[in-house]
Amino acid sequence: MKRISGYIYIAIGALLIIIAAVIVKNNFDENAKAGAASDEMLEGVIQQMPEVAIGTHFKGAMPIADVDGRSFIGTVQIPSLGLILPIQDQWSKDNAKVAICRYSGSVYDNDLIVCGHNYVEHFGRLPELEIGAEVIVTDMNGVSFYFEVTNIETLGAYDTEKMEAGQWDFTMFTCTVGGSNRVTVRCEATGEVTQEGTTPDILKAVEESKHIRKTN
Image (cartoon, rainbow, N blue to C red):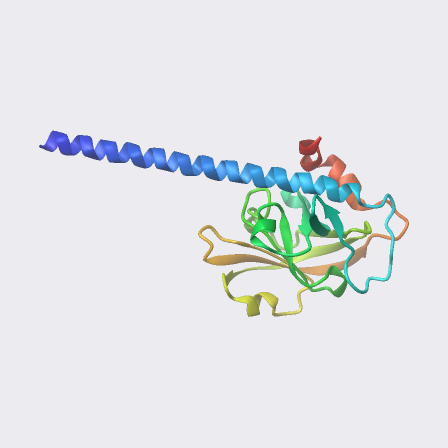
């Protein structure tokens, strides 16, 4: 009887290992798919960037570019994480599977909030950011706005009031593992902005990044 019980425990253990392996593989595949989709959209966004930055009157709605039927307002670059990501104009469950999204606000009004899934190649590495890290948002006119990480906090999944509270110039957030909370990165503008008539900083950054190499 003890021997039979032992076999049962072994079988259960083996089954659990198989289930865990399947889950890990599915997560890996999902991360890879999300990363590839974001890079593909990034290429389309960059192709629509001007060769020289245009516009110095940062008022009104941010310009939008259409890529394969999806709308984008620009990109966010996080050099310390090696990330350059296209930003979709609006959040939806479908959009979030492809790339990070605008949650609210505008970079022109110093109140832009963007969100993304915790895929490794989306916002999954936000918890690794440190105070003082550089973050760059570039609009579709090729103008880059420079920010510095000044606060990192964890908010409740449904705490929308706290997410939108405060005088933060730029905010990024993603869900924690399990989705019960939101890792929230707050940034302040440094005042550095791409000068009109100069080559957009993002073009060189993309050429040197892993993201453009994936899409070639």
